[in-house]
Amino acid sequence: MPLIPKVGRRKFRVKLVLLTIGAFLWIGVILRMIPLWWMFITSIKPAEEVYLIPPTLFPHRPTFAAYKIIFTLSGYISSTGAYIAHPSWMTYPMYVYLKNSLIITFGTMILQIPITALAAYAISKLESPRWSRILFLFFIGTMMIPGQIALIPTYLLIQHFPFPTRSIPYIPFTKIKWPAFNLFNTYFAVIIPAGFSAFYFLLFKGFFDTIPDSILNAARIDGASELSILRRIVMPISKPVFAAVSYFSFSAAWNSYMWPLMVLQREKLYPMSVQLARISRLLSGQTMEVRGREGLTEDLTKMIELGWSWNGLMAMSIVESIPVFVMFIIFREYLMTGIKLRGFK
Image (tube, rainbow, N blue to C red; front, side):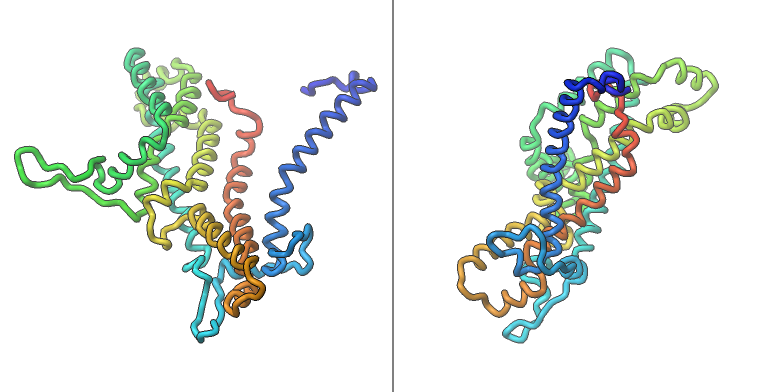
């Protein structure tokens, strides 16, 4: 239903208000699109054009060399006769970092969504009112703890899984240590700590509370198990909340930076978010070098000719943003129409 009926739009004052509102909205859209446009035109600029002052609004010689380089990792012969495939920015082609991001993201979703949904369903439909209230406050209370406080215990947990201690404890009355695993420098170091989310728990429970108990009780009378009820009744009804949580979980895992940076020290395991930040720091130093010298070294000149500059970083940023956009397209019906969840309206 429109905010103002069509009949009322014929008045001059109403038309003026609508035009003003539309103008402000279009200004907002344009301001939001400028960074995307700048990122795209920078990605198709030659490397030497990126450093022009003042910067160009449109590329003089558009080229997709940056996209080719980040996927093929082509190199050149330096002045010393050595083959250089990269200016210490990327040891591997970009699809390696893209693969790492996909493994971490889908691994997180596979672990996080079922655990959170089952916990929310149990508290919403299975526990007694007293225990349901106590457990609900316990889970939601974890949202009050800043993530920075949990970094050290989580780091110790990864080193001595499943013990968040400085050293592996001994079995009581023996000198034998409990079996433990060092998950440092593995995908599990990023996936396991994200196995539960209090925010997604709140979304799931808010939706499960709206499901009538009479439907579930009728299924129980017919002899259906709780897992069967969850699979055949609750999950089909709960497609909107599962879609929303899937999109949020994917976006959060895909863009995570600080924790993967702490527990993944090998470049071969870096996700896209960590590699992009690393390249950005190195490019900042290179920009100072380019602008601080009158002439460029031979290696730096060849590097710029190949396209190793900010255009490559922008190309990687565009490629990184595509999966999030695809996920939004997949779940757009539930995200755009609005999901009536408690505390999420």
